[in-house]
Amino acid sequence: MGSEYQSAEKQQGYQPLLASGKSNNRSWLLVLSILLVAIIMRAPITAVGPIVDQISSSMGLSGGMTGLLTTLPLLAFAFVSPFAPKIAARLGMEFSLFAASILLTAAIIVRSLPSVYALFLGTALLGTAIAVANVLLPSLVKRDYPNKVGLMTGVYTVSMNLGAAIGSGISVPLTEGFGFSWQVTLAATSLVALIAAIVWLSQISWNGLRGTSGILQTSSVQKDEKTKVSIWRSPLAWSVSLFLGLQSFCFYVNVTWIPLILVDKGLNTAHAGWMLALMQLVSMLSTFIVPIMAGRRSSQRSIALSISSIFVVGYLLLLLGGSAAVPVSMIILGLGVGGGFGLAVMFFALRTRTSGESAQLSGMAQSIGYLLAASGPLLFGVLHDWSDNWSIPLLLIIAVSIAYGAVGLYAGADRKV
Image 1 (tube, one colour):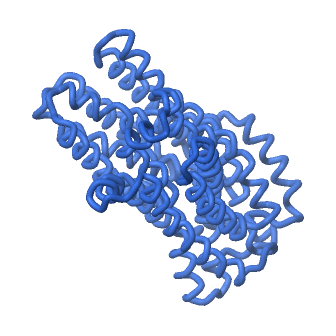
Image 2 (cartoon, helix red, strand yellow; image 1 turned 60 degrees about the vertical axis):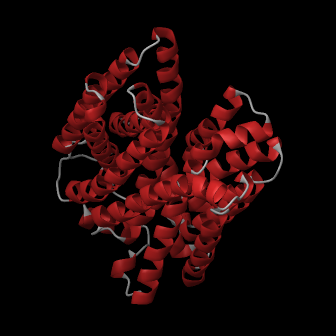
Image 3 (cartoon, rainbow, N blue to C red; image 1 turned 180 degrees about the horizontal axis):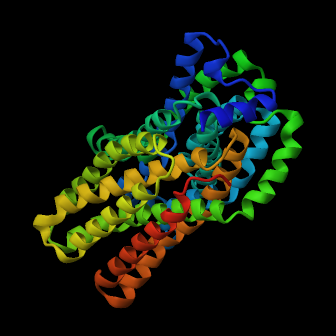
């Protein structure tokens, strides 16, 4: 993979970072830039859940409007993702990520203003900024670390999960422990976004706004516009997109409904929250390990099937087991959620030849994937209301997990879009 990528990129006039004689300081600063953006890509979203009741009551939101606070970023991911490669092709990779960090900082502050309109406008802008980073980071890793894609993918996906855990973990202590308002609590994450923007600014000064900073050279924009068309017609690209979508479907169902399922099993609210935290903690392990494993293999079919099996076992335990089985099911589901996301992101690099193609595939997959993911919590909730139990919704998620494995068989094959 590495040699094919380097050859293709050299034809476009770009030399990968590790092969271009850049200084060690530049390399470590780039790693720091990637980590900071990754950390802040989920924290502003997960910080809402634990204090959503405070937000809803203080702003007078209906149940549907409250749910939109979680769904709106996913919809932004779906609709903005296809445009991110074009933005990077025009402005350059580093400048695009810098701009996304600035927009994210501003969006978090706007969302924290005492206005319903500002709350939803900031949430939409926040989703837009994160969507750009979602698409471009895998492409950046492929471009600058062609021989360490698995390791770097593992590092930044773990950072995303760490940011998600911190976001959900600090909300209640800040509001209840320190007495901050929910506006101040949500605004706190803007500090990390601002630091990320400052660090990315140094990347721009190294590379300039164009030239080597873009995922595509200006001369190759037309070539990759043709690639974009072919990617949307590629069955392999669709399989990668569905693979990400089904994984995200399961993840957002988990974070939305598992606490209520556990409460119905007899756990108190605090214990249910800790069990969800356990799932997120375990997911960090598999998020790091699976991309490294995937990068060392030409085919990832066996990994996809293993993750699918893990999901099925975890949900079966949740369906059939009592309260004593809950920790085991959370550990199993955590391994599946983390590994599934890590593998899906790796496919953006493994199933493409150049960073330009990687960005196009990432944009397509995240557009389709997050649109599918946005329907998960809603469908799960509708089935629960209709059946008045958790059995039918859990049977649905088991069927989704099996379909996830079937799609993984095609997406995991050793070929390129």
